[in-house]
Image (cartoon, rainbow, N blue to C red; front, side, top):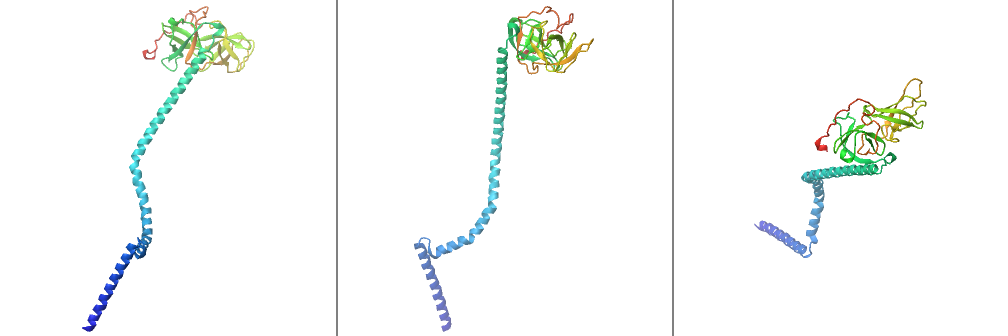
Length: 299
């Protein structure tokens, strides 16, 4: 009984002692504002768990970024679509501005063009083509009311474009010099010999010289001779050198000076009267096709 009581007393005393130490340590820790044993214990715990926290952060960071990216994906797509529409709108504005600038430049050029021999001329605009790409005709927005008559020469700042073959009160039809029905009396420079240029329906003209005594060379200038068109209008340039052969017609090709695919504004020479205006480009007795009104929407 005695030994048992002693053991109990020692156990009780040890427990009470530890309890007192713990109380003193806690009290000292609070009074020292985070220092002491408690602080050391906290610092140790943080040091122990810091690697675990970093590992968890590294593992979780990509997942968090992925979730954020998915949440913003719809917004990014909408913004990209808006930017694409804005770019398309700006590109369309640039194209419209460039087209307007070209038109203004063409109008300025044709307005400054002086017809040969200071002849009277009417500025007009081509607003329609033939029914197909193979038709070598164009329609003007001026007609009889503006003084335009059949047979009038049509020019631009580069050279001869064609000839008016039909008119109404407010419109005119032009046959381009590339039309097979159109023949132009010409003079080749520098030889000054004459010939006839005829359309072939394509990009080049055929030059025939029936009384040539000198060869023609690539690059020679070809102008109207004044028979059916006012003299001195640039028609084009010889593209192939051709020599004279006795008893044969000298034949070669001519590239038109005017870019007929890009013609917009023109001048119609109204102060010139060809000797035989009733003929169709030199072919007597050939009646030209009837005037075809351009589509109403284009006028």
